[in-house]
Image (cartoon, rainbow, N blue to C red; front, top):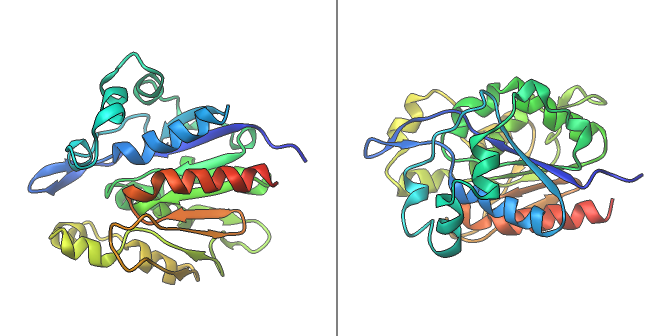
Amino acid sequence: MSHPRRAVIAITSATAPLHNGNPTGLFISEALHPFQVFTAAGFEVDLVSETGKYVPDWLSQQPDFLAGEDKKQWEDVSGAFRQKLDNMPNVKSIDGKKYGIFFASAGHAALIDFPHAKGLQKIATDVWVEGGVLSAVCHGAAIFPGVIDPDTGKSVIQGKTITGFTTQGEYDMHIMEPIQSWGEPLIDEWAEKLGAKYVRSAGVWDDFHVTDGRIVTGMNPQSAKSTAKVALEIFEKL
């Protein structure tokens, strides 16, 4: 069966004060790097959020996370990435059956809206049912509570091994208190709730991803590019 050479990247619409009062939102490289990987492979790539809006994460715009060519692409509002990001379609207009890869980008804000993002979850579910690849990075795995396998009636990650941002990382960044105020589970907690096995690399900022069948997950911003590359490799073998 031939699958569409199209990818859809999910974007968080949520925002909240986090980094010393600066906003969390979309972690830019976690969407930009997959966009680069998929477009370089000849894919048509769309970006979509639950509300059609986004707020850039403050931390993701700092030099440690955004520099060089990436910074140029982010600041080029007429470029392909910003045009897609700044003009996202209505989530209800997106037909998941037309995509071969779903990629959930993140930012801490994804913990807030992704577990409840029915529109994004439907897109991911449609990609899954059609035999496509589901991928997520960092906090993007918070999308999986509502991505249901029709054969089991359970989340697609039940019985799977996944990764995502570490609880240690939240403590190391000294942001656990505001995150806990949101009242939403962390990624390892979601894994346990949904019957998945959570694994991580020793280093919080290691480039680390996990593949389990048609599901590919990455641990942190440093893993966004490698996660997208592996999702592409899995797609090519379908």
